[in-house]
Length: 253
Image (tube, rainbow, N blue to C red; front, side):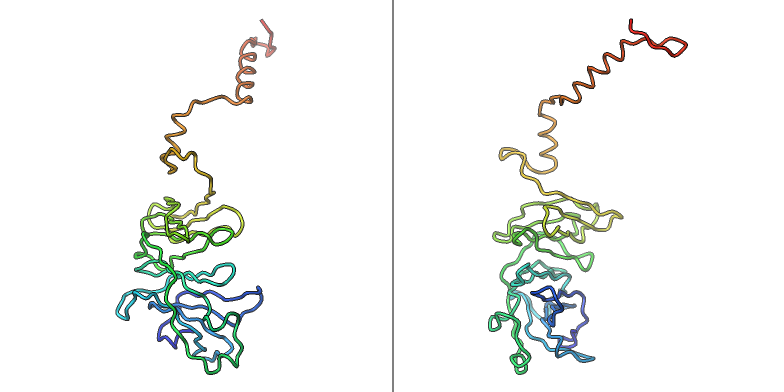
């Protein structure tokens, strides 16, 4: 797809609003450019570039490449993760085409370059390639990605704040995959196992909500036996009052 940009493709995402086959695909490679392509113009060597996307801070000499692309549920935004840089959001389709353009509209169309809506940083994307970034939440309120530090970062899209920092891997966390409907996340990295996480409400507004904070809170909290445990202790006490004799019979003293 990327001979127009003079580079091989590393990652792509299909643009489809109806769930059926789409003629549009976002693709990125070993530069800061992401291209939106129309497959109706595809040949053996190339295809029509409708739009390109590049952060405004990037220069031609920057050593960056695209490591992941994702779209919001309404297909109005795209999320691009860059190796050696941050995560950026862009408007998905050219403003001149609010819906999928026709072949006639695109015949003489000149590709335009779009700059970012916002950027999200703090994580490290240096040591492994194809670190994905994903939208999360019922309305794509969050953005999540992995890091070379072994952490999974979850950002609030509206503010850019890090709302959750998960120690997902002892070495490198390559990605985090949110469930489409439930508050569940799957993280994966260099380790041989992936991990399943469940989003929960804070323990208290007055204590640290990290793993260590929750553990400390649990240790300081007074332990109250459940009714099941209390009943079992009483049952064990009654059983201990039985005496076992040599022939296997039990007698109550």
